[in-house]
Image 1 (cartoon, rainbow, N blue to C red):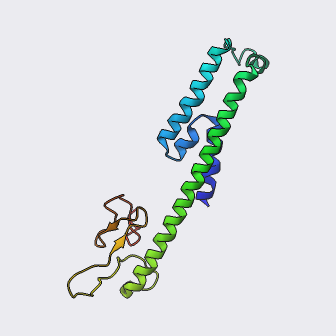
Image 2: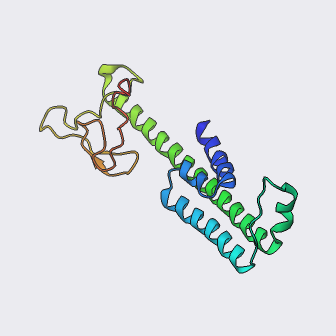
Image 3: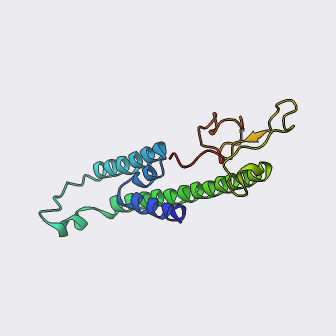
Length: 172
């Protein structure tokens, strides 16, 4: 459920403040790029059209009249594009998380089936040895997050540092 709300929250935050939606998705470069594009474009447009600054607290009605459409429209359009981009990036991240979670769940099931000592569904043990003691070879295990081969004896991927499905989750 949380993964489904994250793109909407990112889009709303991107509308409130340029780049904030991307920051909530931990996309630092994109956040900076959108922020600089919208704010820099606004400053450039205000300078180009020689718009005098208006104090919104002194006269709130004068603010909408003081900003010409040629300035406001591009800023609103860029803000909407930023919100759309934050939403699409958030949806892609949620889909990737769902895919990784499904792969981790499948790996937990395989690990539970391969090692019957912990009982079905425990998912806390790595895959069993290939030869069950004759040679000490282990199964080739891949990280569900990055897809690279990892050592089944450790509880995290040494490539991407993500915990592996059979890692103890009580400590966190």
